[in-house]
Image (cartoon, rainbow, N blue to C red; front, side, top):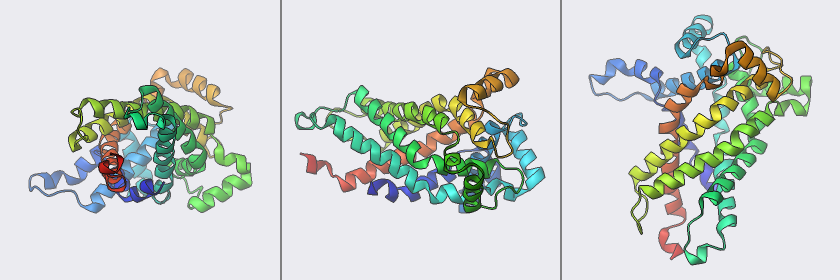
Length: 309
């Protein structure tokens, strides 16, 4: 469990350094001079992608990424893109600990009888361990995700910050309110974390020579592809989750997952379930490539290959 917390800084750098159009725009004048993006520019690009994704999915008033960016800027200014960012940054360690810690423990449990024989985990075992990590993540982080979506999705000053947001939710809806959208979150995360770790393990193995440790290239490619695959599968339910979480906070009222899906399809068509997919994919490859690279690097430090011989 200690490992994921240690990787928080690296993971945050990956998130805020996502390869978005905002980053290209902010640094276009520097490319010809060979200058890299500054920390402030990288941070700003990350804020753009997170907030825009939530608003595209939760609200039907936006025609696309750039329309959302323009409307947000015209109504709220540059400051509007930073709404709700401090809270998810401060809680990234909890998310990482829940996912990677539970995956490692589940994988060890499922394969403990194979270690002495030197057999790797099967695809079914990797998928099962990934699904378990998704379940743990839902139980541990559902309230965190709700508060993040509420803060980023608000277009008026309904919430002054994460503490005020939690207080308002508890007062209006009770403890149960903190888990609004929890079923949609579970339907998104449980299978998708299975499809997150499975492609990673398979691709990493394909790109690694027999008897050798996976190299940096193999880890980066496998991690990046795993991120894109998992988000491609997760995005439809991510849309439903965001809409359910905003229900009761100025958003449209939905009675549940199926009702939200029916209403969304009736009013916006099936394409509604692809909202945020482009933004998720642009961000997913670099973020997850670096996340898995840090994972493998630190695992080698804490558990050197020689110790297993």
